[in-house]
Image (cartoon, rainbow, N blue to C red; front, side, top):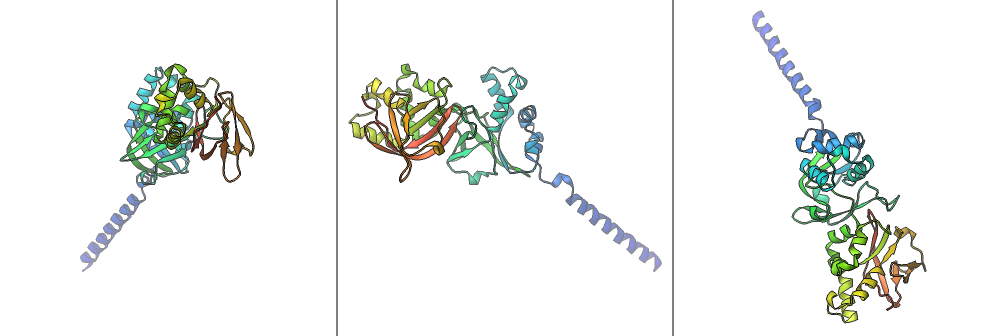
Length: 325
């Protein structure tokens, strides 16, 4: 009887030991959700991103508590970026430039792929055009997610979505996302295909190149949508862009641009007279919504604002502005 009792005690002790062991396994730190940086470090295909974050002194930020979305370029994406920009390696990239590029991959909120809709979001990057308005990112949701028009336009495409972290979420992308220019953002948004065609229709004008660069920047562009251009062609009787005289098209396009100023919507005032790149003015009205009265006394509504680019800002309008000829 004594022997049976001893065996029973031993069995109960063994069960208790196993139970404690299991509980310890449940509480093991390896089961704890990892930070964005920890997950990146554990992924061999993101080692270049980790090295870049450490060089730019951003690893600590993305390793602490918070809520971020990181579009994470692969090693191959970083290699292509270095080659395209003439850098021998990551160490050759100036720290401040690298920091802004990396911040251009980060949103200050956790956004799952199921939460993404086609439109603009704000990154944490700041270009040289504005000290307050951070760079905009255009996300296009179809069968997948394209960023700023994809790799061909300086953007990227999501290849692996929704890697959960304790402080946010990671979406792996196939390109390093450059700071978008005005032309990059116009190309990315399919609502501006006619505007892009107009900008590039007469290459000798160099206008597309101007809006892609920094000379005379920052720029403020009041960008007509495809629908606005369609109405403009009907109104003027031109059969298409090819029918518009080159000087008329160029002056009209320049009439939508303010050079040397990054004018945000909050800076617009009622009755404000705006001087344009075409050398002619138009007038801002704020009664009943923001609008523009052009030199031909036509009124266009400002329908979206403050898409921040690296070399300026874009506001959308629903009618092509007409200067005097």
